Structure formats: C-alpha cells, structure tokens
Length: 221
Image 1 (spheres, helix red, strand yellow):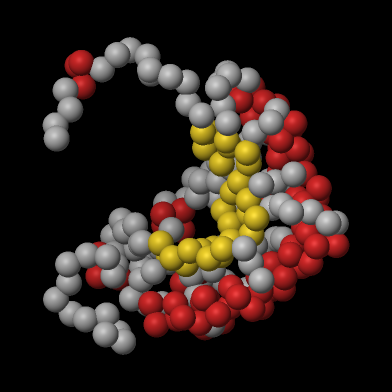
Image 2 (cartoon, rainbow, N blue to C red; image 1 turned 60 degrees about the vertical axis):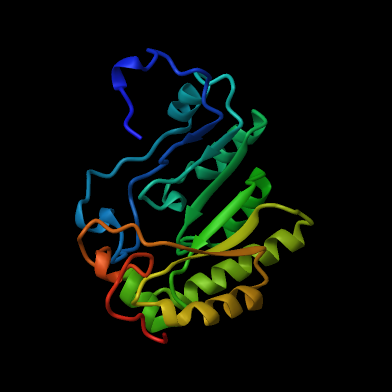
C-alpha cells in the first residue's frame, strides 16, 4: 500500500523503546556476505560518554542493541557501556563473531549484566567457516563460546543468554543439521537460522539465497 509522506506528522507518535547503537564499525572478520567487507569506512568507536548522551535523550527507552556492521568486542569500553545501560534498567544485547571473546572479556561481560550474546557462525565446519567469514578462526570461536558458558556457570549467573546464528545460503545450507548439533554440543540457550540479505557483492547475491523463487534446486533437495 502506498504511503503519502506529506500526511506524516512532524514528530513520532511515541518515543522509541529500542535503540540500535553501533559501538564500533571496526571488524576482525572478512565475511563474504557483509557490506563492510566491500565498502569499508574510516574506523570509529562510540565512547561511553557519547552513548550516555544519546540514551539520556530517549526517556521511554527499554532496550539497547549494540551492533551494526562492526564487531562490538573491538570497542574496549564495551563492558563499561553495558554496565552503564544496565544501571539505567535497560535490556542490552548484541551480535558478535566471538573471535575476541577472551577469558577476561568473558568475565567482564557476565559481570556487566549483559542480557543476551548472539554469536554468528554461519557454518558447521572449519572450511565452510573460513570460506564464508573470511578468517581461519573456527576452533578459536568454539573455544571462546564454551569459555563464556563456563564462566557464566562459574559465576552462578543466568545471563547473558547465549545464542548461535546461521545465515542460510546455498554455500552452507547442507550444514544446517550439523550446526544444530553443534549448538546442542556447546550447550547454548538458543540457535537461529536467518535469511540472506543480498546486495550483489561476494556471496550476498540473489543466486545464493534459498528464500526466493529459483529454477535450480538447492543442494540436497
């Protein structure tokens, strides 16, 4: 249905309840389906002071999501940012590649009160992981995720909820069952498969999507 933009009110009907803040645009992956790999921008991080200034302008805020195309763990102020937001009574979560999730950061994030940690895998084998995410870090990522779960148990915490994410494309669709088994083996709380958003570069092309009309079958069909 067409929308007449001239009829829109100059102000939103209500204040937003969720705010997306990209705490950094830096990344240590080279994902074949991510626009950042093909259209890089000058590196920048959001400071705690900047985030506080933004959050204080949204009185009805209930949730903050700390990711964009960058890797949140690369912002050294991340635990302090999460702690500040939790101190304001907000729900906090972000997506991550888990490459930089070292033991010290595992503990800092658990102690910060982070509500949800979403780890992007997009594979169930080292070879497919490297082909899609552009770096040879499969074993490191699994070890870091296991460490986060172990740290959560050691500290007697119930958060963050840890989930695994899998962008489904023709390159990896055969590994979905193994991905599910990997999630069970790690003991994460949830696992998700999501569609590929394509923009005609790398693997982010229409031909890789399994959620579209297609004349050729997906492998395994």
